Amino acid sequence: MFGVVIADGERLYDPRAYHDRLLLGLSGIMSEAELHQLRMRLHQGERQKAARGELRLPLPAGLAYDRTGTIILNPDEEVQARFHLVFAKFRELQSARRVMRYLDRNGLSLPVRPLLGPSPHEVVWRAPDSARVLNILQNPAYAGAYVYGRRQKDPSRCRPGSLTGTVKVAIADWAVCLHAAHPGYISWEEFMANQGRLADNVCRYEAGHSGVPRKGAALLQGIAVCGRCGRRMSMRYTGPHADYPVYCCRSDRDQQGSALCQEVRALAVDALVERIVLDALVPDQIEIALATAGQLEQENRQLERQWALRVERARYEAERARRQYDAVEPENRLVARSLERAWEDKLRVVEAVEQQHARWRAQEPLLIGPTERAGLQALGENLPRIWNAATTSAADRKRILRFVIREVVLDQKRTRGQVWFKIVWQTGATSEHHVQRRVQAYRNYIDIDRLRQRIVELNAEHKMDGEIAAILNQEGFVAARGCAFKGENVWLLRTRWSIPTVKINGVDKNPMRWPDGSFSIQGAAAELCVTPQTVFDYLARGMLTGRQLTKGQPWQIELSDEQMSQLRNRVRRTKRSKKEAS
Image 1 (cartoon, helix red, strand yellow):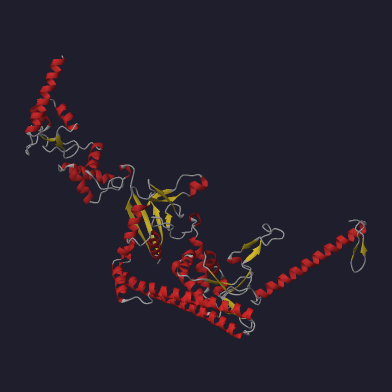
Image 2 (image 1 turned 45 degrees about the horizontal axis):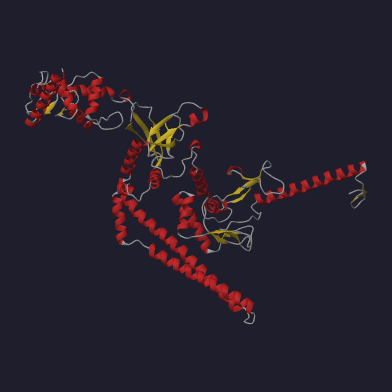
């Protein structure tokens, strides 16, 4: 384009002329500055109005404006009941995903209020998912708070012509937060506790979060704390089938390349913690069973109310469709046919909802009968039976544990040969415990001196290795890898510590035959006319049957007349063949 001039209310401008270009530039700068000032004034006015709680904001589905502009709970009873149920189940289940699964399992939808779409700002029902449940739990409006500035624009993320660049703002940095500004479904204190629970459910041990209980076998997953550096301990599983859990503190190694802080094998610690918790819950077993029965009845009553409201809504929609059909003129057949189809669709929905309600009532009785209550009480009297039941998952056991235990501090380097741990109960009380750990060598054994002295004493009493092992097991000693003592373990220790073997015949030479009729090595060699080494060879090849009380003890050989005749003939044939060969 050439020869174009620009005009405003005062004059014409020729962009080819220097002075006209200068005036156009100055005019544009002033206009931009004016627009910026207007925008700033409008934004400041909006902020001041929000600071007084007078700025009208879009409300979530659980709230509504009345005719005077006051924020109230949604007048729809089904909407209110659904939100009360969501918060109650999160209070119980402690996980947004588990709440979503509960709603989905029971066929309960969630009310939402879309800002865009075919019916903006109207409450519609959608299938539950984790994002919708999280939006409900993280919305401060449901706690009765008036909030402005939950999100803001990040200039580094903004792109021209796009709505991107919006980031969440921390609760402490919200521009306006007025508590108890309108009715809510929960208190502000419960809202803050929910945010802490949601943040803690994120599985980030390095940030101090415990995460949600998972299906792994480790009982202290998420609540195990390193007793040396104070960090949360992560998990790893060893063994050919990855079924041996280990608590690891490896933050320093992963982040700084330093040595591993510590690792604690979980099986022994978990077993002792499990026993301590079950013993602690013994006085409350009956109360736990009765509380469980009451909770089941309350949950069934809540679900019954949800179903009743759902049926009532379906019937109302069908009745409304009938009234619309009755109100149309019969001559207007096109409209009448459409309204008739809509009415029939609503009637089919009513029938489907009533059938689903009937099936639910058949599967889930509203009240627990005497038989079921007696069964629950019997289970409550035997809490370990519930704990070890096949239907109780590892995640369920961890949830039970977290109700009574806040964290467990582990340290396997504090005491030689043992794992020291401290249980921090939910009441704030603490208790310290020790458990014998598996060691790689007896030099790491905590009671090595006492163990050696005890073996010397029992050996001096002429006890055999098997007898010594049985006595050590009775007195609470364990082998290096946490197993019970066997005769082989005692023999190994005696050999290492140069403790002499106790002979069954004292210090005398072995007789040719023992009192029970069996032969010694020398006696068998004499009867067969062979050397003692040949007798050892016969024993190794299975040609003779003998026994030892333990390693280092004399052999007691069973030698029948038939065996003796066969072996003598073998010896004669061997000598004859050697003589002929020579």
